[in-house]
Image (cartoon, one colour):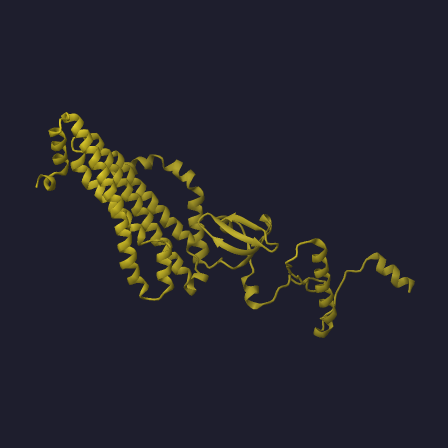
Length: 331
C-alpha cells in the first residue's frame, strides 16, 4: 500500500533501510522516478498515437472523401498525441519534485509551454487543412484567400506566444499587451509589409481584381505573365519566357496593372490595332533550348502562318523603306 500511496516515499524508505543517507536516498529515488516517468511518457505517446491511428483514423476513412485525406496528410489528429506525455510530466512533477521547488516550477512551466506549442501547431494544421479543402471548391478559383489564411495563422502564433511568455514568466497577458502598445510604432515598422499586404489582399479579392491563373502586365516592373500564387506579402508571376518574378501585393493596388483575363476568356491574342493594322503576337516554346533548333522551329512556324493567311483574307503588312521605293523606281 505504501507504494501505491507514494512511490517516491516508498523507494526513499527502502534506500534508507539499505544504509544510505537521507540526502543521497532522496536524490537517487527522485532521479529514478524521473526516469520512470520519462519512460512512461514516451510509452504513453506511442499508445496515444496507436489509438488515434487505429481508432480515429479508421473512423475518418470510412467516408471516402478527399477532405479526409487532406486532414490525415496534415497530421491534425496524430499531433494530438503529444499532449499526453506533457500532461503526465506536469502532473507527476508535483509529487516527484516536491522537495525541489525550483525544479518543480521549471518543469511544470516547461510542460505547459510544450502543451501551448503543440496546441498552436495543431490549430495551424487545422487551418491549413481547411484551406486545402477550400482549394478543392470551385469558388477558390475566383476568391483567393491565402492572404487571410496567413494572417489568421500569424494571429494564432502571436496569441500563443503571449500565453507562453505569460506561463514562463508569470506575467498577465493584459500587462504584456499594454507593454506592446508602447512598441506600437516599432511593430508597425516590422509588420509594415504584412499590414499593407493584408489591406491589398482584401481590396484585390473584394473587387475581383486578380486571381490565380490571370495573365497580367506591369511594364514598370517588367512583368508580363501568369499569376501563380497570391500571398499576404507577395504575388508570384511566371513571365511569358518562363522566368519567375515576385512583386509586393500592395504594389498591385498602389500601381496600375493590366489584366488580360477578358482576352483569355474570349480566346483572342493580339495587340491593340494601330494605323498599320493589327499587330499579331505568337508565343511558342520548345523542348529543345539550343539556339539553332529554336530558330528552325521559329522559322517553320512563321512560314506556316504566312502560307495560309490568304485563306482567311489576311495579308502581311511591312512598313516600306527607302530601299523599297528605289526598287520600285528602277522597275
